[in-house]
Amino acid sequence: MFALPATETITALIADPRFILAVGVSFLAGLVRGFSGFGSALIYIPLVSAIYEPRIGVVTLLLIDFVCGTPFAIREARRCNWEQLLPVALAAVLCIPLGALALQYADPVMLRWAMAALVFSLLAVLASGWRYRVTPRLPVSLGVGALSGLGAGAVQIAAPPLLIYWLGGASSSIVIRANLMVYFILLEIVSIGTYWWRGLFASDTIILSLLLGPVFILAMAGGAWMFRGSAEQTYRRVAYLITAVSALLALPIFDGLFR
Image (cartoon, rainbow, N blue to C red; front, top):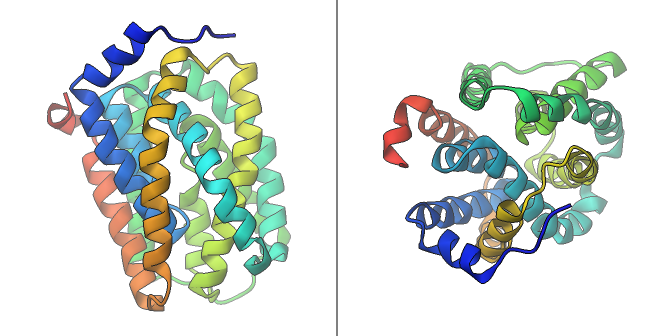
């Protein structure tokens, strides 16, 4: 359980110079999430983890993205390819608790290096132009879901395996975006229960989520508006750029930029 924060705590969080940086990151992450259907974690988690610490970055994004993303996911559900989505989501849900253990007990700096390595690996695969030409079988779908669930539980970064899986195939940007929107909400429901059970919610994360949430949802609505009418190639290029910039700035060697 946690106690409601005192007014002094709220004032201290807002007065902290790091809060302005967190607001900027929240705006950018929400804009990207609304446009692409993913990417908020790839930007928000590494950068807010550098500004504060991984626990704050992971838990605040989980709360913000769940509240802000659910209305968008409900709207996009009719565009999903459920045959693609359900096996991946099932495997991911089963692996989230294992990832949460890493968040709770692993060294924060080591976790941040792991985040960056994960994102850079994704970028290399996508930039290479690799595409799979056959429909993946059920074991492949389950493997992708398991990797995604581990990433979601540990650092709320579930997108990399999915991006290789779905962006690497022939699905349209509309279907990929809808799949991602719905998928993340399904995972976040399980993540919230897991984090609560592990005692990862604290007053500082709750209040930061409330302060940063309005910025995120306004930016997300703007990103959704920008997506309308965008070209297929534009969508993919933006996805790659998001990955590259977030991976670079997330490296611990750049901590001086944020502190």
